Length: 156
Length: 101
View 1 (cartoon, chains in turn purple, brown):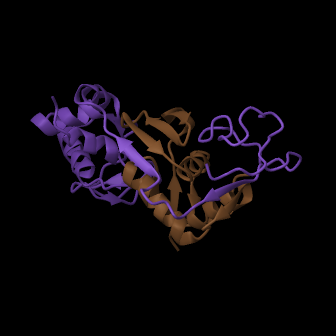
View 2 (cartoon, each protein chain N blue to C red; view 1 turned 180 degrees about the vertical axis):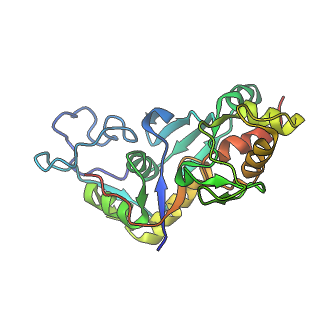
């Protein structure tokens, strides 16, 4: 472990050189000036093998997760924008474009629409086509990409 | 003026289990499990609270930790890894992100 600095927190004296109770989700009270800030050493660089390793689920599990993962149209960073007939994100109220979907689509719904051309739930055929084109254009880093990518994975 | 911001999934979108040197993170939306090493869990935790620009994120991390290699380049490289994994997303906004205190 890198961080051996004094992080004997007031309420967490269990394993001083371990992460705080739940590092990624611990609700931090650091914003409160009355609470001494926990000072640990954190190295941002010098990671040789990368800081993230992803474990793809086994095929059987993939089938289940694909059914339930979600794809927002468009993603949260562009919420409220419209989708034109080519699947491009355009400003709200652009003529001929479609409003964003009021709810994200399930992976299963998208897979079905792509496979047999059926419409996405709650849409007519033109709107569904525009949404599907949007989803096909998704890139890494955009909301729903991982779900879309997992739809492409081979199924056992 | 556009600015790139980064945000992570909401807290209930992840299941997190610290495992000695690693932190295992199950991403509910994709059904994929990720093994993270520092500083990825800390970055993910910050971005789970709200969207931040690169500079704002660096400031927050520097506020909570004694950073080594605390450069924009190093942080950008870690963010790229998290984006690649699908755990965080980037987007463009037109103005400064709202500071949450």
